[in-house]
Image 1 (cartoon, rainbow, N blue to C red):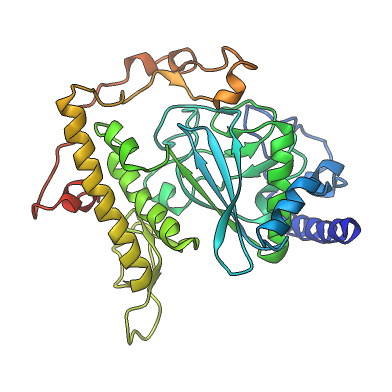
Image 2: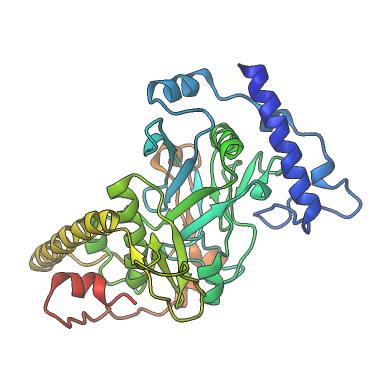
Length: 372
């Protein structure tokens, strides 16, 4: 079994090398330089290191079997900054995604909110697609998976940055850093999944988009953006199928399909007007029911917090990222003031709360209808 897996991994390596030779080679790094200097042998020509072909641990292989998840079935990664957790979901034999394993994140940098420009130390938030070309077995940070930032949404909104990774070494400047042991498992799961399908989805969130968290962060200027991400999150959580992601009018669109009797599928221009499209009613109905229930709960919690005099979460934490509590004792002092790495951070503006615009008197309008 192991020998067959290694052979398949080597076949994938050949495909990776072919893609790299057919495109402009970009060194995969996250913190400044990643050991790439002129005159070195191109990464695509290096022998594949043992850490990139290592078989999954026996316990994880047993878990796959227990959960009826084929070894080469698709995976999906979900990242939550505030909780500092990375979830690996995998498609089971029935075709639906199930949670396989949750990894505590050793380090992420920046503050809650999306990445805007190169050098802001922000880890990305949004929906990303990872292809074989974005897998780096030669990273100086043990192993690395490029998230694919910036995607078409980021580019349409003028957001820039490069080489934002999920990698090892527990050190980050815009990345999600794991321990070497963790990234070894995550990389192997991704490698094996790419044998079955040449891409997988990464969903990066500021926190779990629960009513309680949205109520706590009710004054954040990022709330409209997070509300938009919640639509895709709800599509996934209610169906256990990865949402199809498109971008038009500088916003995300999820699970779009042609209108009935349409002669051709809709064409999405990230900066252009959205074309007419429909959403699978079985997906839309379940997601909408969840959104309405969550909106009602958010409103209830906001009212209770206000009555109890509980302030909203600060718009800016003033800290440079975070790490899961499991690592805080081991890496004491690694969460540092943002002003030390971004001199202007201590002077970030204190933005006022976002006004509620209620066009139809509904809770959904207050929390979800005005996001765009």
